[in-house]
Amino acid sequence: MKDLWTVKYRPKTFDDIVGNEQSLDMIRKLAMSNNLPHLIFHGPENSGKSSTAFALAFELYGEDYERNMAYFNASDFFEQGKSYLVRDKRFLRILGTDDPKKISSSVIHIFKEVINEYSSMAPVDASYKIIFIDNAESLNSDSQHALRRIMEKYTTTCRFILSTTQPSKLITPLRSRGLQLFFTHVSDDKMIKFISNVAESENLNISTEGIDALVYHAKGNVARALNTLQVASIQPGNENIGTQQIYDATLGEQSENISKLFESMLSKNILEARKYIDQLILGEGLSGQEILLQLHQATVNSNEPDDIIAGWVTKIADTDLYLTESANERIQLEALAAGFCQIDTDI
Image (cartoon, rainbow, N blue to C red; front, side, top):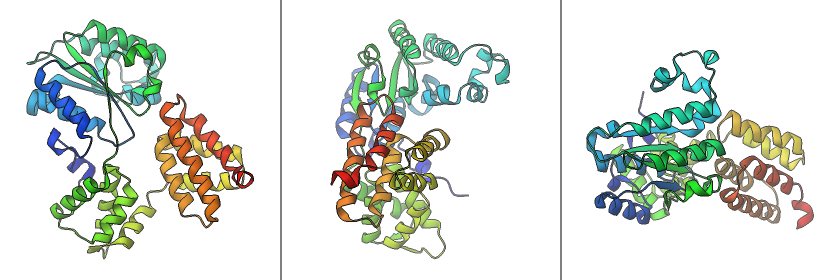
């Protein structure tokens, strides 16, 4: 079985990262100064936040960076809860059991205990260690206040990196403890160069039109571009990859629930739309922005009149803006569904 290209081509060093030059330059300077503060990376999904955190650890600690870096995914803690905790061997000693039914402590209490313990341990062979918390928007208020106190207490032994797609969900005292750096998806010209290099490395024969189609579909998302290109490359008879092959590869990427959500919005069935929004967020684990991207594609591919499509796209764009400032993605998506029902009367 082939390796996933998103893993195979994951950046290891700063030089491997595509785009976000301004934030990377700042991090390089901080790493060289040996005066690294706590950091808060914010930006859309798959914009390079996690890759940059691991590249920073590699820059500071070398090949054995994992000795001085701890990674935690807040969404795993607070959305999967105890069923996730018992699967992670790092927590077995703290929990004392691998049976979630026997865990009496709350998830919040366990989170505080885990982070406090990892923060208090001295680094192996460095001035400080890095604790990287991904999807920090999943932390509730109590856990954020506890994290703020831990960050203040153990400044001499560790530095925290928080990564989030929704900085507005972080409490102000927590945001003020770290240097905030914005990440965004890469530009088309950098994406073209990246795809061309991957195609050459994989001995793929992809046309200029195929690259353009892939860039249009990926919209700056490197992970999406790699997944689509890999799917296109393994289809039978796809020795030459062009526009059609890229289009065929993208057909399987859209969730069936997106189509059902779109249909329920067209039929003005708000209750049905809410059900599919829940399935997409809770069942499939899609972020609000990922849902919007797929809704945008469904809208563009519909056979409705241009003025109707234009109204839909405008509302999707407005919702995308609201998501960056909102504390609840579900509310914004439900508002979008309600707004779709009014398009024909607004125009």
